[in-house]
Image (cartoon, rainbow, N blue to C red; front, side):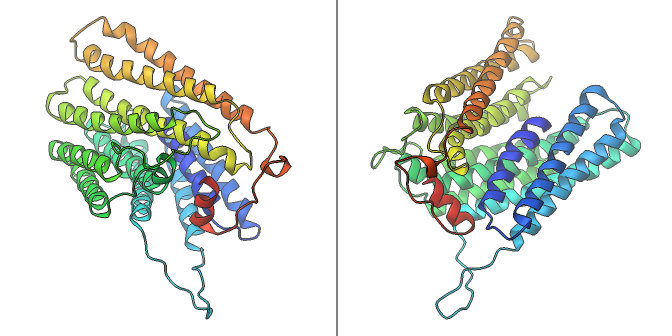
Length: 385
C-alpha cells in the first residue's frame, strides 16, 4: 500500500504540482529534482525495511523523514507563487474555486499523513517489536491516506478537468461542497477511531460527489477524446462507480469484517478501481502534453491497460472477502489471477508511456499549435484542455 500510494500516485500528484508552478530561476530544477531523489529514496527504504527487515528501525525513520521533508519543500515552493497583478500594478488575491479547495484539502491531508507516518515510525523504531502498525492504528492511518489525501485530490482535478473532457456541466457548488464536508467529517471520525460512523459519512460523500460532478449526465457536446481511446469517458464513469461501491464495502467491513478480507477488498477497490483507473485514463490525456508531445503512442494499448486493470480489480474485490472470511475456499485460487491481470495492466501502461516519450515534440510537427503561456495552474489547465 505504501509503495502504491506514496511511490506511484504520490509521485504523480507531486509531479503535476511542480509542473504547474511557474519557473523561478535555478529553483525550477533544483527543488523538484531534490524532492524526486528524497521521495524515491524514502519509498525504496520503506519497501526494503518492510520486505527484508534490513535495519528496519533506521530505515523506517529515514524513510518517513525524507517523505515529510519533501512535502514541506513542495509547500515552501508553492507558497512563493506571486499573485496576478491588475492594470494599476497591485496584486489581487483571486477567488478560490471549489476544485482548488478540494486540492488544498488533499494537500493538507498529505502533510498530515506524512507527519502521522513520521511520528508513528519513530515510535515503532524506538519501542516496536514488529515492522507494521498495529491494526487499530493502521485503520486510522489508512482512512487518512485514502479519504484524506487520495479522494480529495482526484475530486479536485475531476471538478476542474472533467466538464471539458467529458462535455458535461460544471460541478454544482453546493453539492460538491457538501461532498467535501462529508468526506472531511468521515476522515475525522475515522482518525479518532469511530469507524462505523466514518463509513456512513464517507459513503454519503461518495454518492453526493457523483451527483455534483454529473457523472450520469448525457454529454452536452462531443467529449474530448482526440488522440486517446474512445472508451475514455466510460472508464472515468466506471472509476466513480467503483468509488461508490468501495464506500458501501467499507460499511460492510465496519460491521462484519473478521479476518481483514472485506477491508482489503474495500481498499483495493479504492486505490486500484478508483485512483489507479483515474491515473490510467487521465495520464494518456495529459502526460504527452507535459512533455510537449502530440499524442499517446497507442490508443489500443491505453484501452488494454485499463481493461486489464479493471478486470483484475473486479476479480480481486469479489474474491478477497470470500477467501479471507472463509466463505468460499476456491476464491483463493482466483486471487493470483487478479494480481497477474493488474500487473499486466500496469506494464502495458508503462510501456505505452515509455514509447510515447521519445516521440517528436509538438514544436517539431508540421501541424502544431502555439505553445500556451501562463502561470501556475492556469498554464497547466490551458495545456491539457
